[in-house]
Length: 249
Image: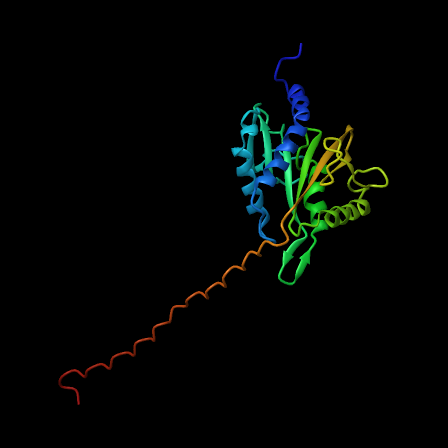
């Protein structure tokens, strides 16, 4: 007899909540002030996490929302990964959660726009495929901060990298995005399915491409570090001349 709250039931429940989670994330992004065109990834994800925690809708869900969470027991051969935002159901299992991995795309810098499409794949999608993230569940999320606001170019750039690495990513040909089954009419969302080892069930990733404002100012560069002060060595004291003893010439 299956007990209520078993891991299998929680996994099924979590899957049923993915559309709600995706909707919360989209709403939180739209409510957040646009970040600087070259803002740091951690600062954007932490600001988004604060808004998610404060939303009335998230308070009604049986989840805890954590930033920068580390799963203590990753897949054998994989390093521990620090996950950006995690929706953790109220179950005593650290491996059952919905992970939202965040990456910057089309970062605006003073000398031009840096795409970071390859990093999105290498340090995001592949971590799911290899089981470094979310190895016990069947779904995860990638959140792209498109800091120059050009979502179509970001989608195309990431897709090109996915297609080139589809075998490594466990994807069937042609290795391309498909419309999100959750919000098929939303052009900011895409979906990919991946095989992971001997697991017959595909691992499905929801990709959210959220646009920044191309007019926001850039984050100023950090001030230059002051050179460390070096202590001046004291000159060695000259030995004092010995006074001649009385009676000596």
